[in-house]
Amino acid sequence: MNDNTFFLDNKIIDHNIIYHYFDDKKNAFHIYSVNIAQISDLRTMVIFNKINKFLKTAPNPSSDSIKKKNVNFLMDNMHKIILKYQLENMDIEEGTKKLIVDSNIILDLRELCIDDVKIDYVYLRKYTPKTKSRNDEIFKSRFEPCNFRYFDIIFEEESIESYQKRIKEIMNYLNKVTENQKCIILLQEINPILNAYDVLQFYPEFSIIDPIFGHLMKYNHGKINEKIFSKSFNVLLTKNFNHRIKKMENDKIIDFFSFKGNEKQKNDFQNIKYYLPKFKLYLYNIHSFLFSNKKIITIMETFFIQEMKTMEKVLIIGDLNFKFTNIYLEEFKDLLDKHSIKYELFSLPFSGSTYEGKLYIQ
Image 1 (cartoon, rainbow, N blue to C red):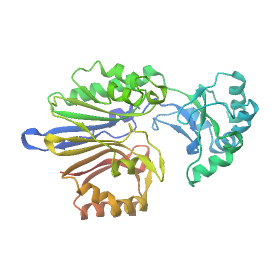
Image 2 (image 1 turned 180 degrees about the vertical axis):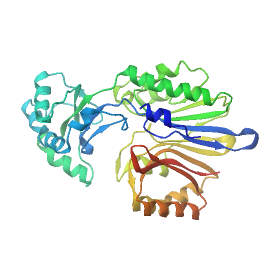
Image 3 (image 1 turned 135 degrees about the horizontal axis):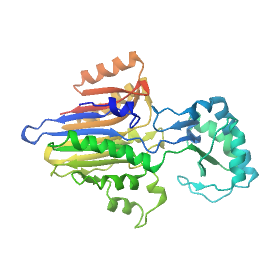
């Protein structure tokens, strides 16, 4: 089942709904993977050297006006404003952000933007380059003079009400199609998690298995921390499913999807491994960063396939973010066929050459 048209056309999601039927005779069940893009703000992602909007298929006139050359001008000159207002030594922990409320700073940033854009929020952040990647080299050249402090700018932000409405529409659909089913729902990119929970509580048919508050509180020594609750989460829900689901420690497959070189790009809540003892099934809920062509083939050949084959039954499902030219796509499929790994791949609606989907041995 892959019912995407309504949700894509109405800009509720910008990924495919991925479906898997786990056939275990009397204990068969259904799995749905849905990426509900987090609040779809138009914003800088300075450490990745780009402007991003999370709901990528949604029309946004402002994004057309923020030209690439002007983005580069903004990022090249941002350090001057940090130095001007003596923010280079402000105490700030990596991974956190501080809201900037000084209207003079915001005005100076608007002038750097060149284009006539509005700015909803400005955050001061810190990042120390850790790799020899192109992005880190660019970041270092720009922000070393200001002690690696930088601004992330949100030009436009979706309202919480709009985000919750999108979640509600997806949940209404899932509730309907799973009416008499035993099923597992895997969600990706849920953020803010607390606002999503406000919606999910109205669907008692579904049980929230992960993340649970007890698990989150362990990470934070009993305190609700902005650093955790501002992150993007994968969520696991069940319906009519009374079997144990065990959360597993990270393994090499999780690390593959979470790391870029030596740098961890995804937080601990974005790529998750589970085990279902009743079915002897290892289940991976994936939201990866981008891999391309030969690198995917090489990693598959050198360890990924071997790791999958150590498990009797395994399903890896979600936003794989595998980018292929046609030649490498066919090579990838041939490799999976050679090792009897079943798969379904769906091109992302906003990128015909980038794929999400599932890999499984059952």
